Length: 132
Image 1 (cartoon, one colour):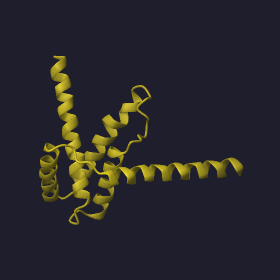
Image 2 (tube, rainbow, N blue to C red):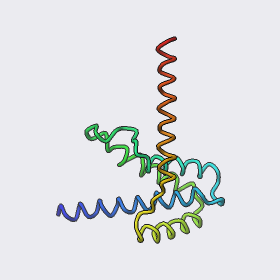
Image 3 (cartoon, rainbow, N blue to C red):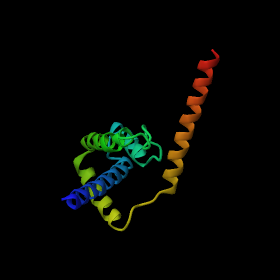
Image 4 (cartoon, one colour):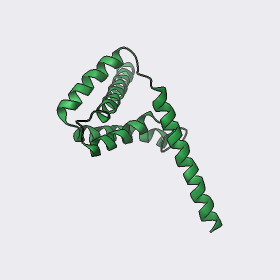
């Protein structure tokens, strides 16, 4: 019983990874409307980000964003993307994921740089607030 439950969750996690990668591919497709591209970029960026809204070390709540926010974001993004484009991106994502997880060092650097920029901005705002 427990083994089936674990296998089911692993399968769902792989499916979610494939969906997120399909969103990444769709985000880059010019046939996707700008608002869908922007939302998909946010979802993909958050899913691939090494920094979570709620750190994983916080008991129970730490995994809440991974279990709720990402799937909900994926579901919304999927509804915004034209079906034909999404089908093509899903096929390509499945093929590429079957050969191993795609790795983008550039994307990792961009995500880390964005988080550092946001952290620096937060520090500046806190300093201004405390001094004024």
